[in-house]
Amino acid sequence: MRRALLLPLGLAITSQVEARDYGQHGAVFSVIERDLLEQIHARLTAMEKSGETQRRNDELKQRTVARVNRPEPVAGLTRADTARRWAFDPTITLETDIRGAKGELIHARGTRVNPLDSVPLRAELLFFDGDDPDQLAWAISQSPGAKLILVRGAPLELMKARQRRFYFDQGGKLIGHFGIKSVPARVRQLGRLLDVSEIVLPRKPGVRP
Image (cartoon, one colour):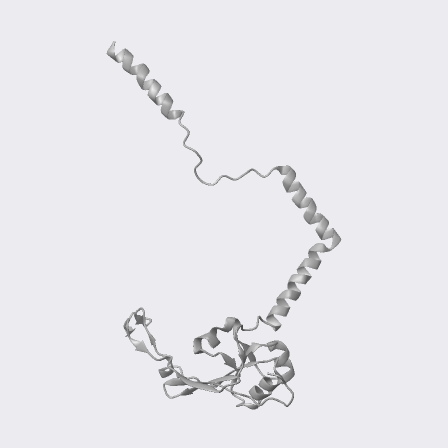
């Protein structure tokens, strides 16, 4: 009799467990109906026939070319109206061990390393606004070996017109690293330090700051 009572009770418990609502688990994705896929296909076909696809591709190409030729200007910079000069120490503290190809220890973690000891700055870095005729003329008049780095302007157009290589400080990474606030500016090596200077150029009569 006891076994007969236990069996129905066990079945009742099992039934309750199986019927429990555990809620939603994991991502649920709706099924894309075939009609929707056909609509998408029809839309793409219509765009192709009307030339809209080609037009959009051409617009994307033009925007890409424009951005390459004239990158986003470095924000927050002004034309220098006060000369500044300071020494910049590029020494860094290693956060991990530096090892050679065979695993030999070159520099231990915590070692202070000056990159100029192994890779000297062979050319001056000149930062300037390429849309400012005065700054452009100043940069071109400096040492022929200097690296011309724009913070604003069109590098490809300038390279074609001036027959010299121009660079662009994308995102102002170098400007921010050296702490430069105004341009034109020069960075050059003096021993184991970098000499950074912001240079005031004479303004033409009648030109507002």
